Image (cartoon, rainbow, N blue to C red; front, side, top):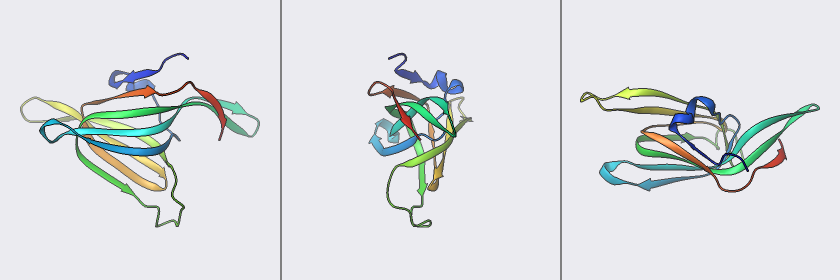
Amino acid sequence: MSRTHWTTSDFPELSWHDNHVHGLSIREGPHGAGELALDIDFILEWLPAPGAYTFRLAPATLTFHEVTDLSVSLSYGRIGAAMGPFSIADVSREVHEFAPGYSTFAWRIVINWPEGLISFRASGFTQDLRAAPCESAD
């Protein structure tokens, strides 16, 4: 297995588009902040195949650190969908400046199925693969 760990500095080269989220965990931390951990199928590579794609993917934990101002909105009921993993459309961030010169990031995780949004502030993230990648069909 090649690379198994990523951090905030790797953000520009990462994409979570169409990654499925199997679980979400909120962990209490000091000073009112905490950690937001997502159990994902991380797509390492999209592999073209006739009429479709296959993927090289692995189970991973994506953990955001020093999280505040968390908002989660998912609506399985509006579309009458059965419960199952939700799928990420995009992850974006913007620098958020505080008055005394401290900055953090304002994060947005847009959910493409079912429709939804997770937004929060966090200092950064780590991501770790939990098993070797395998090839899987869409």
